Length: 161
Ligand code: FES
Ligand code: FES
Image 1 (cartoon, protein in one colour):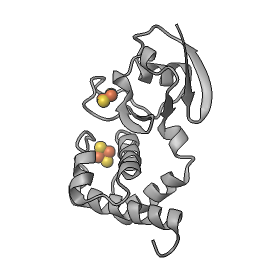
Image 2 (image 1 turned 60 degrees about the vertical axis):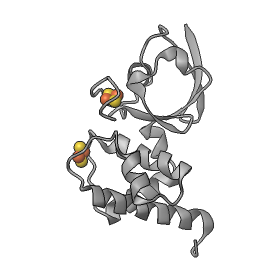
Image 3 (image 1 turned 90 degrees about the vertical axis):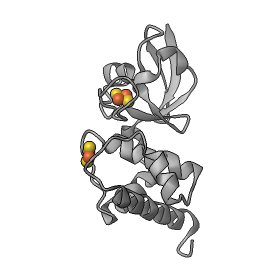
């Protein structure tokens, strides 16, 4: 089947069997390697993308479900102003990232702040429940996302936000 969808802001199409996983399409057909092959069962977060703005494990999405939908991968997301807020906020709070978890940690912050611009500690911990990392203390993560939220508000609404 041929599936048309929007990938990092561009209209694209791909030929694939309906059951082909989105992660295979991203890596195999588009050479986008930011979504990693981890557990392939929706448990580790290594393959996260934003699907219509929602944090989604691309290993669980079959090709037939992406028709006409919008997908943003970490490669596309790093071109945005929002990414720079996240990078700066995480650095301020010493949030660790590595090649295994960076995609999940970054896109989880974006999806959360899109829903809740000023999240509470509980909102943040809930949003990161499926992001596996033992290297960052939960309190650093909370401080990091709160720093990102403040930077984001200032960028959008000006100095006094
Ligand atoms: S590889 Fe998709 S959640 Fe682990
Ligand atoms: S910093 Fe990547 S898994 Fe912990």
